[in-house]
Amino acid sequence: MATQSKKEQLNSEMLPSVILQQAKIPCRESFYEFDEKDLNGNHAATAIGMPPEQVFKTLVARGDKTGICVFCIPVCCELDLKKAAKAAGAENFEARDYTPGQVLRRSSFWMAFLFLTFLAATGSSVISFAKDLALSVNAPEKLAVSLVGVLSVCNGVGRILTGALFDAIGRRKTMLLANVLTICAAGITLLAVTVSSLPLCIIGLCLSGMSYGTNPTITAAFVSAFYGMKHYATNMALMTFSAMGASLIATVSNSLLASSGGYTAPFLMLLGLTLVSLVLNLFIRKP
Image (cartoon, rainbow, N blue to C red; front, side, top):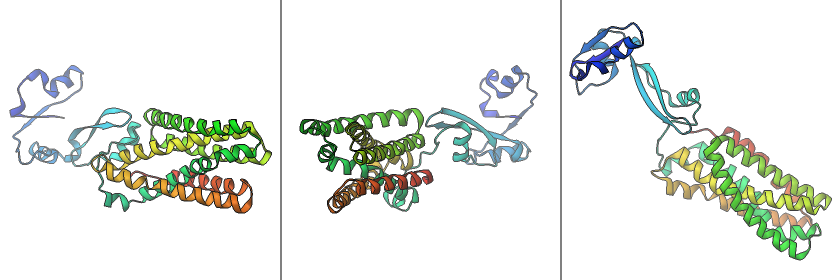
């Protein structure tokens, strides 16, 4: 069914019916007088004497990964943006802006807050005792000092790679990869101090730096994707408080180091927190 207002008959070659006929699709024209105060599809269906379920409207949406998508649904229905995104293979079509108050009432915010806190805890802790950690596995003094600098370089690399991954594969996969990276960082470093292996320690420090670098990029991309840009600065500031939580955990790690006399206890705690962050990550959903 092709519908067209009489006031819109400016060029007969552009009528939907002509396009359908050219495609050899059977159709008939129905004309109606539209009311500028009532431009919805239900009015059009009533005006041409058709059930709303048999008259369709065309909606255009822009997906974060798919670009422009076109949907055709009955005029009596509303487009479910989450289902539309899933059908189109997009992360989302939503562009809603959330105020800081609304953000703080969202479970997604608090799960992401804890996820980021636990994710950053490994990097924050390792940075605080990186030199001594390297020395504990018999690294030369100069190498131990150099590894602190290498850790910082890896931090920067982690930020860049995370941003590139966000653009290429989307939020969910990037956050999961960051989780896996952090688990590997904590696990390999724990193994390094257990067997006193300098090569494993170097790998662990590099991975810890990269995993720590994923945190600020994920924070920025997550806040904009979930809560919009209108209140981005304030919402971003709220989410960055997760870094304070990571610093507190780093303090606890150093206390465990001092009380236990070794790195096993701190890294077991950090490894446990990374696993908790993975569980939280799996349950984060867009508001």
